[in-house]
Length: 491
Ligand SMILES: [Ca+2]
Image 1 (tube, rainbow, N blue to C red):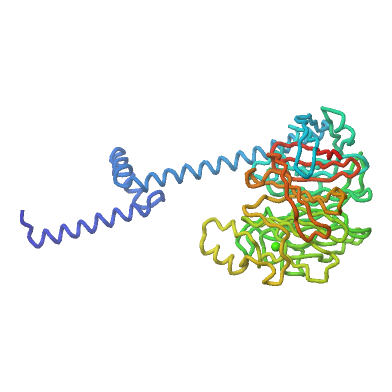
Image 2: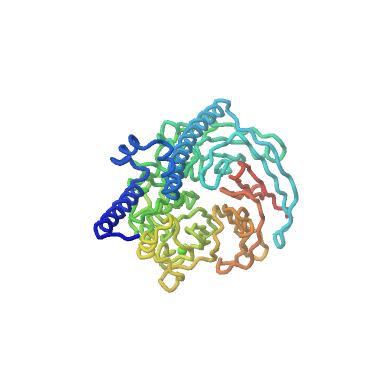
């Protein structure tokens, strides 16, 4: 067959025209366009289907999946809202009943080398249902303290209760009595009552005063970690603002990472005038190096006038804190890897700077695959693999992969030779990495070296831990399945 010049030009023009149409339709697939309106009218359905499924097959399938994904996301968020509303209703009903029921689920003797034999008891509940780690599926997050021979427990969504400690020793079925509070009138942020990162962060009783730390919403998506305080009573506790900074960190801060998990929030007694309080960075990492800012710090706060001073800084997310004489032992979450255990020597003359976010053995996360955000993060926060070389204090121990470090307690006078025993709780997911466990760390006399590390696997995220000297017992709150565990040392 032979083409003349005219038909060649016509064919070329037609080819360009159809290729143009193909790309134009492909480009606009899934969007409401002018062409779509026309094709809708002039093309029969079977021809439309043919084009969609054969000619534009991959793009068409992608579009279908994208639509499906959007619908599913909408459905999930609606269901989460419904679950949130139901949880609030259940919490109200439980509060009206006035007790939280716990049943004994476990009672055995365990033996750890160089620590000795211990009795390990567990009590579980199905009455507490609000978890404060939405990703890791904590069934219920709670915190507790011991005072006047009683265990006081507060759930992440603010249900306060107590039981005498004797009951834990003698009964299989425990009823923790609920103490009514005014929390629902103080806290108007719904996220506080839902499965979210927003909620109670610690409970501490000092001299008949009850302190709770919590994530406080200052303005839209802008939070800090604050403290409420009330007079301890078994009938009703009225909380008032105790420590509430004006500043907050926005979910859209300069670092571009929404760091709602980095809140800190631990409270311990410091001296007759002050408490100690840990505050995380909430994702605005460079605030840890700014001495004027409360974020990324361990603060001493006056019990009467609420004035604060910085004890140490350069912390990311200090989740555990305990005091032994002139030493503070602090645990701290890094983003990915590089969880730290730090010793803070209060009699030391050096600047108590622990390096975040200039030095860290961890790496950044939360940039969700965006290489440009990642390189921005390392420009602002280089995470050098030495603290000492940059003038900061090295951690006593760091863990990669991370343990998900939580509370630390000091078990005083455990070793006859003057060495020190520190227990560290771990959250995380993988027991083979040391997560979901309690770590028994033996330090020498002045907390200079760790001599030994033994692990008790709980196979549950250990959120809170207290040492009860009167009973030589450690109490754990296990958040994966809402259990209180007690470990009695057998000396
Ligand atoms: Ca550090």
